[in-house]
Length: 190
Image (cartoon, rainbow, N blue to C red; front, top):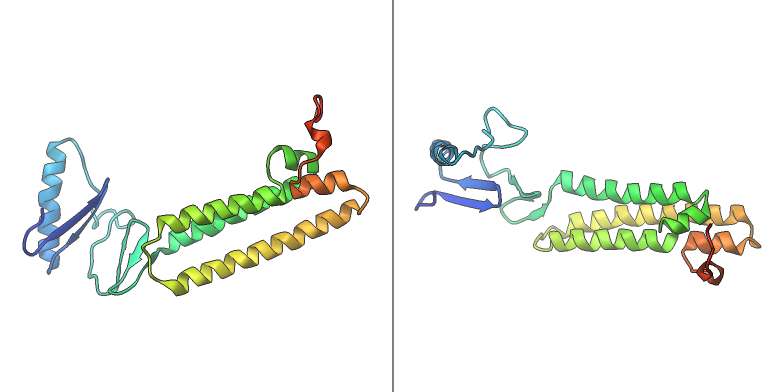
């Protein structure tokens, strides 16, 4: 599908056709579609399935493989950024919900330490997935949003810990995720 005027980029089952005119893109797409169908495969038509495929000019950027690509900027697209924050929100919510039962919180590995580690792992994986992106402003904004969520989470944790009272060190340690020696004994958590 590549020629002097046409570039087709493919990654697994996603592809991008770049050409100087809409007519050439459409013709190349139809040609590729014939080949795919002869192999028992298909592709989303950007005209009839605009939520799954797009056709248009690149001067306003393109959306490909979870990225918004502009002339000089590549960044994770809005949906990818939204999913990242939703995933972090879900992790935080689950930890906060389980803090009402510190033993369960500890057993299910949703303590403060493990929750922060889960968030860190997700951020590291997501960051590695989009390492080639160059929109520093977007990444800084995301970091700021994550920081606010973590700050709010830690404030909530502080309130839960206060509710147990300072003498209830067992529940406090379980919420924090710091191992209790008494939990190492056979028969603990029965």
